[in-house]
Length: 202
Length: 243
Image 1 (cartoon, rainbow over the protein chains, first blue to last red):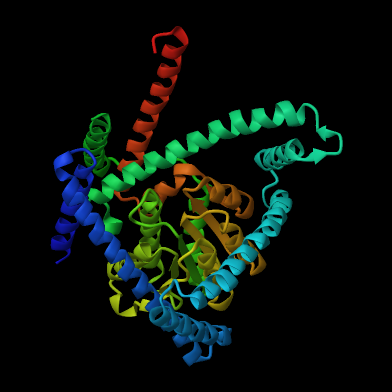
Image 2 (tube, rainbow over the protein chains, first blue to last red):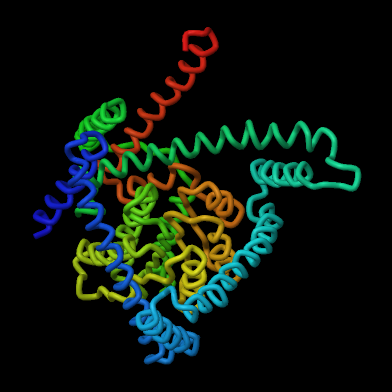
């Protein structure tokens, strides 16, 4: 059964890949990608059921923080059924989205600013080496370079050092890392596509 | 056609290198994060604690699929090694497609260890479908489920900072790797040993030692040299006015 599944998956993977290079394979690529999108939608629903099962189980066993799990299950059920009945574009559903979900995500983003600042301050405690010091100094120089004072930008740092660090050193480094990530993605993709990855096809 | 040629070259090289690596085991440079990861797997079993493998919110249908597959490779290896423990590892994902095959990898780890009956389906879970809702859901796993180490591996943006902060607050060891530059910068300051760039894709070779994984590392090195030569050659040709 596993071999059969692998053969189907590899064949479909190769067909989708060919669609990028051969115009004749574009139609079949589009059809297969549409099927994949539908499957991902179903997977999202199954994921929600999983979330429901995990938290219902927590409530049933009375685990630590189970009150939050109960609240999650309740609100999830209400939102799901309200969305299914009223449709997502209904004003009430928009209130849920714009009045609850977006502000909560924005608050988390705001919290992240404090977390990142705190993490940077503690960096030297965790990693007291040359790279840690260079990291802190670079971050400080970039902040000094972008801050505006009553008399304007800080000379040299704002006009020379900051652009050079951010546009030459940081950008070059970032491009190198991204090329490395792309090569890693290519190698991983080929390994999976040709059935050579034991962690996928094992 | 250049892309197709590169792809075919890479595929042929990968196949040839896999055959070579089967005959001669690879010698890998030390990466502290993987050394720590191997140690924490052993320690967590001894301490009766769990590992939490967080796969990020990368999908399998876009450019982030590579990091999702790299995370799934780690999940399977860790699941296999911790399957006999009283406290099996927990996995969380933020993308529905990555999550949908996550339990399969988790279970495959148990099957590989011949303890399929010990597999618990709820140890793999989706905690949210947006980056921040995912982080908000995943950050509560460590304090509530006796987790000793958080392994963040996959696609993470700045929201990794929230998971790192939660790990620090709960005195949980953090090992982080992301294919996203923002996520890498955050994990660099937040974790003891961060994996930078393509090191994320080396996990299978370092932890599992499979020939296909070590061959893909060698393939990356060869392609990296080709990229370096193309960069330097292109710049030199531009400089002399040929291009």
